[in-house]
Length: 210
Image (cartoon, rainbow, N blue to C red; front, side):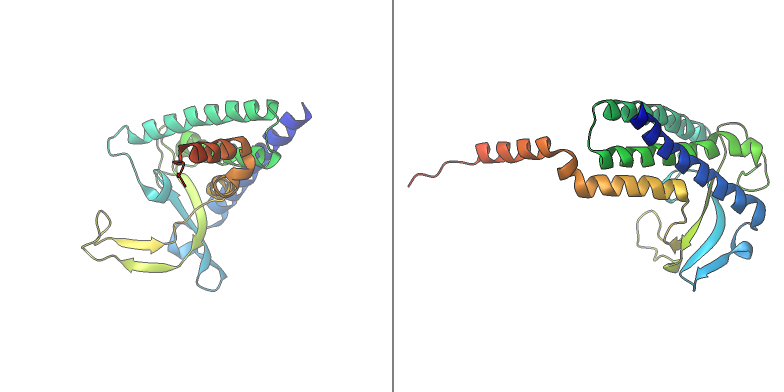
């Protein structure tokens, strides 16, 4: 029981911190460039914006796209929550469990925006009401690496005004950190899978005759 409280508590902490920062940004900052606050020179800023879709602002095309996306996030949240419960009970690597806790907290953090913010904060995209499940995700951390128009020859985004790097929030950062750690240290988290892969590779190699 102690471990369940610990790891689900980490996810809850991410959710509360993410939502607290979003509330501060929404109620204390002006939207867009007028409210932008430099933190470290011109390359790291606080910039209040909203994201209607997935990562990097991508959207599903139909009028029901936002509803489908929010519903998918809801299903994913339930699945990740069950998986976290499962790996805690199986006593898997504690850092791996921590990563899943971060991913769950981040997923729920952005799901709250999608479900409630269109009604609670009227943020479609800003100061305009939208139905339940159609809210915009609030973003604020902006690494201003480059801004400008992309050449026409670049597929999909060519000819459009683009800013690098994408603006993100604590929920996004939590998900990114969790996934990155899993990818980097997966060999330690799943040593039996790594050993199985190596054994299969050895078994498949032809035996040379001397």
